[in-house]
Image (tube, rainbow, N blue to C red; front, top):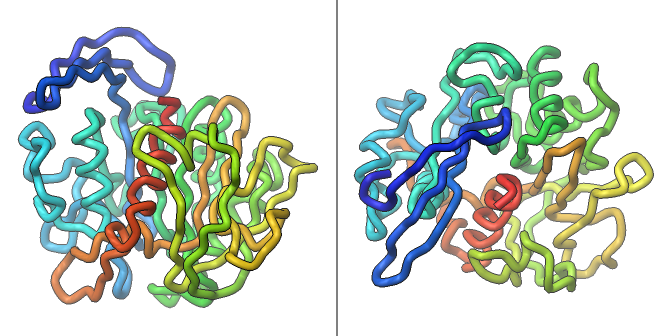
Length: 312
């Protein structure tokens, strides 16, 4: 990103070529390691009133968002791109990273030769999928994580089938985790088939947690505007942990609103509502809400989790 950084390429792991970057912000010098983030648009993420993409032109999300990322500066507004996740995407670019979209009609692959094979990215973001993953895609996603990748899982409430195919995001995520050829419940996370709205401050108290207390700030609250909770099973994955719970719940293995886990050498973050990532802008005709700025913690949570998944 020419306007923000000078990039020097060097060899890294199989997921990507690492870059050593020095970014100048005002008079300070910040050294970062740029990562590549891939946002999925293959699973009906724009069906109905949804707009879970970083950018779309004529209602058709393309691989590379426009205008070009190289033209983004520290003061670029989120509506520079058209998508309800544009604030998220532009924020990552401002931090020195690269974002892309996996366009409609493209298969999710891992270990192949395609330019958008998951091995070429650090983090795969899937916001409220409304079409099931194929058996091959499930294997690709799980092996991507198992071999070091980061998966950002966003669900919504039960009965949120936006394209009327009989499947909504809670069922689709549970299908990925319970019906695959790699491992049953690999992350130790199950989405609960419920629907509720509330604001909570019932968070994990550990001050060293990098998602709740990361470089982008402290996460003190989370607001659901119709979302689903989740439960965790530490006997199948000892690394899984709840991060934020419903306001009146004990900090146990259920009533969890976001959680993290590791699988193999990779990492997973899951949240049960798409509203906190919604920046309120998108394609004409869609009714969207400014969840991203509704609470300061929402942007901090998503960005801290993104960087943790990217191992930064």
